[in-house]
Length: 94
Image 1: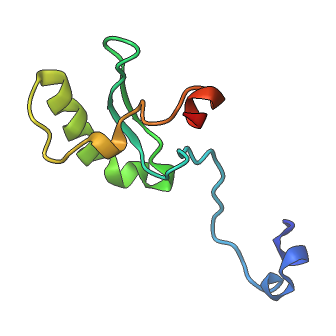
Image 2: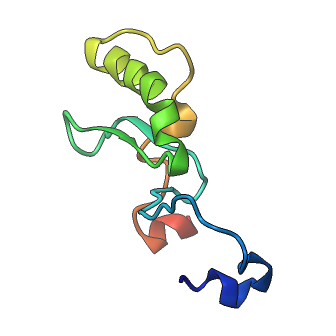
């Protein structure tokens, strides 16, 4: 068995039907990065959706498709800008 019942004894009689493991990509503000990266021409980001990537894939795909074809996005992408975080500690202190 796994280690969960050692930490939570009340789980000792529970049978697990399935288990999941994997990387949960996230960013410090818990919002995904969606859109062009102004630092690298031609690079677009669509990442950091935490555990909701599958559910948000069609909407994110639409936003990226509009950005790639020059169309207007259906929502303001400013909160999702890939470059919204400082790249260095010195930038963060400004």
